[in-house]
Length: 160
Image (cartoon, rainbow, N blue to C red; front, side, top):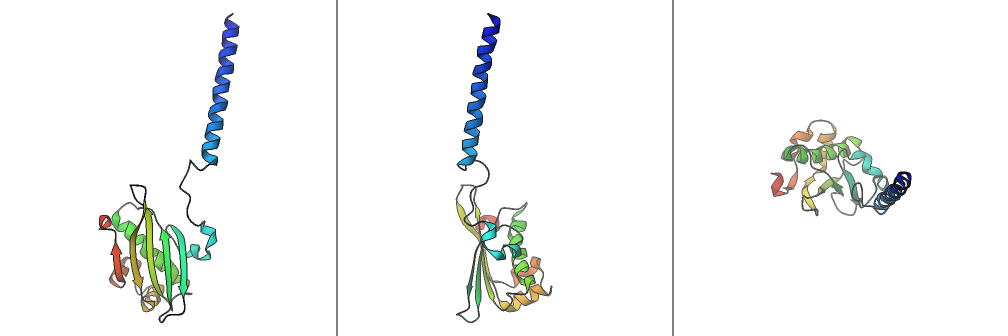
């Protein structure tokens, strides 16, 4: 009689384990696990390789205005400190400048991030004139000093 109880208990346990495995598999299949889905996979935009921190969400070139403009939108994550979170964006612009392909353009850069309340929000934006891009490419301006040379600098108040 003891063997039957163990056998029945073992099959119940096996059934519960199978159910748990199915639930976990469904959870990951429908996107319940891991990171949130990004708007655009990194591979969709060839310029992603120029962005050192975060994901490139949009790269819009406007050759019809003078000076020519590229609007760059990225999605970043917070860094160890607020200052580092801000500076990673300057390094992103340096990556674009170092490529040498876009230094005749003014850059309008902005980044979004997921906030603690779960919403995505703009956290930083600034404009980089083409002459500053050229100096950044030639290391005459370093990323840590870029804030002094950009226009329309804006940062989310909680990062100040």
